[in-house]
Amino acid sequence: MAADSARPAPAGEHDHQGCIDHALSRADKLCAERGVRFTPLRRQVLALIWENHEAVKAYDLLELLKPFDPSAKPATVYRALDFLMEQGFIHRVESLNAFIGCSDVGRQHELLLLICDRCHTVEERAASSVMAAVAAEIVSAGFQVRYKALEIHGLCTSCASRQGPAGASGSEGS
Image 1: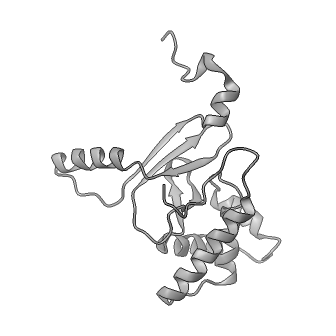
Image 2: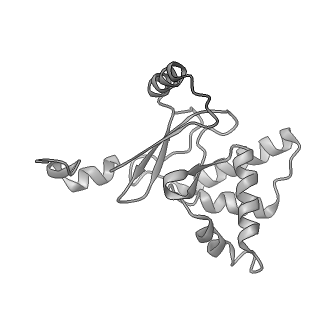
């Protein structure tokens, strides 16, 4: 994970406002450097995505946006999401049809997403050795990649520890 990452700290120590502030300040800086407009609406959508570390769906964002912009429509949210993805500020979590904030903004990178099926948090990991192995398989297949992301569903450390040692995978005895 990148040094300027804004991913979760251990339970009880995490400051979501710090994540939001960090994401917004990076976006402000990069938009200014790139000469693109970081409108108040785009800013608000990014802040809403970073309110927690769960993936958020577009229609949920629309509902969260209503107090700030009662006239917001689905197209409004989708245009903002398209801009935020183009700028690399967010990622789409394909398996959930939802979005998360990018913890390594400003750098093109591959994704390994760990998705907790219980608390719904999503952690972005660099996992360079895993991605190198995947890249080698892709080269060996002669496949031309357009986009690469690995999404792994399971239980985060916190949820797994609450579950106890008896049923981590659910496949015992099968």
